[in-house]
Length: 402
Ligand code: CTP
Image 1: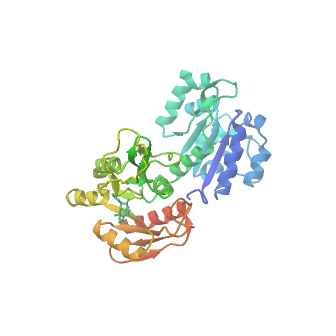
Image 2: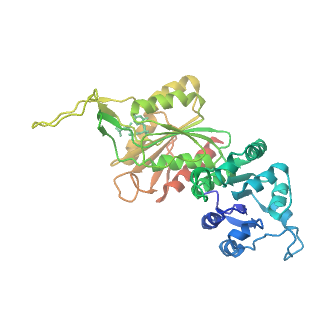
Image 3: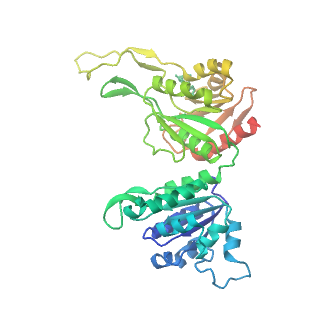
């Protein structure tokens, strides 16, 4: 994950959501980031600097004029050190100061001197957020490239319900990862990923599907985003939360996935078909719920379109996508079956995984895969978290691409 070793400067301002910044800070440190915290004097009324100092193992700066251990000017050394400045929560007051270039405390001074990308996670009462002054200030910050995360809708500290809640830490972390990766190995590339198992309706209440959880495809989409790509995820039904910072397209059936992919391939540089697409669907789904009878029931199934085959045909004319990746989930003859799919579907890479073992493949968080290339090269990866498998695969793709 690109948080490993990243220098994250966390600015905390004076709102009740400041306590949530402690959890964010802890998660960033656990992910391997170097975190330093600057608090506004207002924030120090809500949460103690000692909390952040303990979490980060770095001194916490609050006062521009505090005596430093060395002769550095804190706002200059911190702003030069930061790979990214993240302000959580950002109050209306701090947003206004940032918009107008005020430098009246250590955080605003540091922000003014900081060339790194700026993420702000606003949190305030709904009326303050909706006020034209705040909205104009936010628009000013956007026009300078600041990244805004949230605010979310929900119950506010006042007891009212509206827009003004701090975004979730998961969302803020995703925004940090995306911003850190903006110049990454796939910067400027358009990546289309498919994920999940398609559902083929039998009648209005039943369908045929498979055990795919979608986790591998979602991990590919997330990793591609963190490598700087512009990502679209065509997802069949999964129980997974939408991925931050990418375009989500929901589909149900193989036919819908076929249409969604074919519509986009001309504008795609890299296609990753991680979805488990049904090869057959019930012929003519019943309009009403099928009622049981005493006899056995025979279902007639018909073929669905093969998406990768259609992409291969299209590619002969358009040369897009430049790179196409398929997945082969097998229970026997893993390498032979994967190699034959690699050839018949004209892929640049196939990711073969044995789904018969219980520790990898369908429905679990880990995967053990072998990468197969058209020149016969094989690269087995060890058992890894799917997020790590996705990163390894994209690392290799970026290298082959070059
Ligand atoms: N795939 C596809 N369209 C389909 C079926 C599969 O594009 N109708 C893609 C999958 O997304 C995957 C690759 O083809 O990237 C291999 O899928 P898999 O189901 O393993 O192979 P099939 O070609 O369906 O062969 P079989 O079911 O006989 O193993």
